[in-house]
Length: 416
Ligand code: SR1
Ligand code: MG
Image (cartoon, rainbow, N blue to C red; front, side):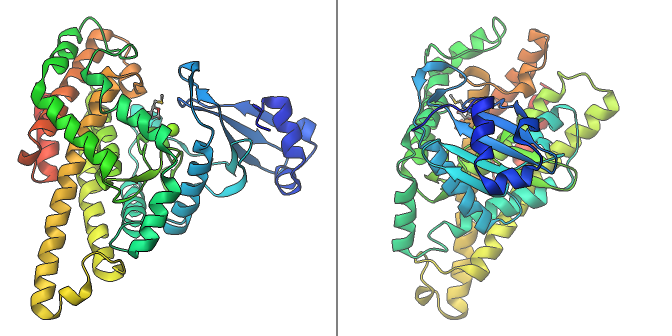
């Protein structure tokens, strides 16, 4: 049966798995085992032996951030394993290698990523990641395209949706924490008081915003376009100068593609706004901020380019049947439709990015980009600027026609 494996129990468990024990090397008693989980939900251990190391992730039957009062199904480990397996096929080399999975223990063993660090921590240290755009856009274009109706036969797509349909408890967290709570009085909300009290109150009164966030919520709930990672923030990405790995897809389900793309863009924008609050030389600050906005632009433009290229060359799904787009005239109309599709996906991306920003400033789960700004007044200034941009992105989404419109507005609100 399920039990939480703390250090001694984990050591015994791993010692009983010959392949893993051999990969670690040496005597089990000599293995070092350290709990390093800094996420909101699970236990994560790094285990090192004489020969090598592994990462072990075990789901807890509750939300770690809150405690046992908030139960959460262990089945999320199953969906995470399923998603990681699919992502490994579709985007090889961009997720950690899977070494072992135990459904009953809700436990997965993966390759130890080292010297990779959590990207969010690198961004807070103003580090530039030259490889990031290439890798994250390959990951998103391939995982989203190949799990969509553009690539799959209708029956296969419906089976795939069904395989993830049971992950609804994790979806419900998103539905509440991102799309509802920040806009109403909710016990778990928090913000940088008293500086943001008025802004928090204004969000609760803002009916234009309530309509916009509710449309996004509906899209999240009712648009199974592709297999999403479901929580693609910079804490779910591990990086070095030359490598990128996407981790932690326990929120995976079939949803709207813009939710993943928007998550990446939102987290880069938050790194941009938080930059003013962190100690760094003016030169470092300027160069980081230029890099991060350039990265926002390239994330969208490279994602769009790669997704369109896949559509032009790999389309095998039941959507847009080739028999309806025959000859030169068909090709012209289909290409125009591809461009229109990407414009709709861009609008979704802008809206979801905005929702992701607002939840990190007024909801339960914040991010350290802002939280590590010690002076609350300084933190609130960075947060308020990000919220002003997010509100514009959410209620005036149609005025953001290109990604340069987003970065231009970010610069404007940064200087506000
Ligand atoms: C209660 S879980 C809070 C957040 O942590 C995860 O990383 C997701 O972003 C979720 O919304
Ligand atoms: Mg996570």
